[in-house]
Image 1 (cartoon, rainbow, N blue to C red):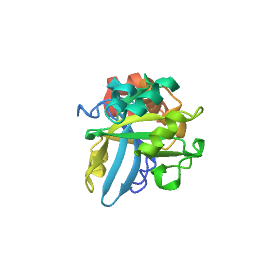
Image 2: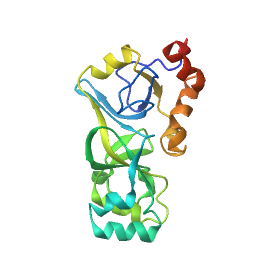
Image 3: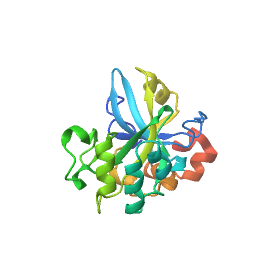
Length: 201
């Protein structure tokens, strides 16, 4: 099967939630994996909208950021629920090459060659000030797994690994990312939903 990958090479990459996964935090989720080591794993759900917009989140950080968001026309920028852990923390998925004013210390976690996930205020301000920051995602919280927890969930069919593909994280509308990921696994999304794990045969 094209989706089979070693459990030590899940990041960067994606996890596609199988229909059998009924955890309300991850049902129908597409997770971008940012880190996977013996100590555990870390990822971000990239297809679940939060009930707030950028303006609501920035209002709790700094009034000057609210002003920047309004001036740049990004006040209504969607915010995603990145996962159930530390949902009070804001994370940003973006293309670091588009921001000249951000140094390496502020870039955050590199995901593949052209993406990064950061959480600093200078990074957020640089994105809001930039005229052409490129696409970016605002995410509240993240997903975390203890040692071997994720490997066990994959073995039990809760997740299907998918190789890293940059456009799936930023270019495709978040509402259709899970369906697109399923298609890239070589599966009909409708059959996957109806047939469950057996549709992958």
